[in-house]
Image (cartoon, rainbow, N blue to C red; front, side, top):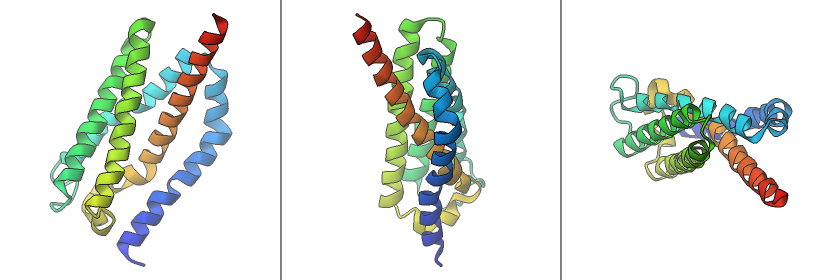
Length: 167
């Protein structure tokens, strides 16, 4: 089996255990929480995305990792992580917290979708070995990030509907 095929299998299957775990353990808990606490939990996970800057560290990735992929992934993660941290710092001020929650989720999804797009356009599967130590990020971490972004948007929409129904 080629390294590109193994990478693509890893990418696809990375979602399966996280979806199973999320459905069994995380989603029931998030749904039962107050909206602000559920979003706070999601923001806490995403606040660690500053780690994406590792794509720019020489020696951690291979010298031939496409720069168009590395820079977009690194700075998109960094921006998302900073926005998530700002949301956490603003949790006591809902007028600031909620726009930051929306912002980090929009920036985060754009980052991940852009990373997938760039990965396809730059043939990242064919160069998967250039990911070096960062190989685990798209396989193990990105699926959980994408799943929690979808959950965050769902919870935002649900809490918005509930607020409208209460008025």
